[in-house]
Amino acid sequence: MRTGRRARHRWLHLVDLNTGAPTTRVGLSVSKQVGGAVIRNLVKRRLRMIIQELPWQSGHDVVIVARSGIEQASFEDIRGALRENAQKLRLLDALNA
Figure 1 (tube, rainbow, N blue to C red):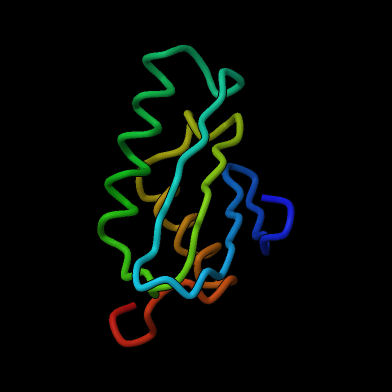
Figure 2: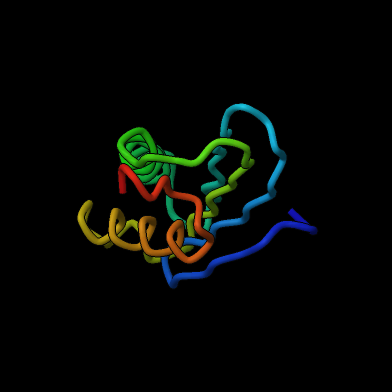
């Protein structure tokens, strides 16, 4: 987290560390600032669905930190914010993006 590159959006932050590994690992952090357990789980389910459909490049460790306000965003808005941040950090495979 300290040495990684960052991309920020008002609903979420991405932190990337280039590992050179054959796969990419993606982790989520959704704190109580986002809301109660039901809201946090809803946000995590949405983020997991978006993560699965994005064409990630291999060799990165990515942490997605959800910010307060994301619970009011629509699924499409969250998808756009995550894709925008991933493209800023050049984490998406250009052939499949």
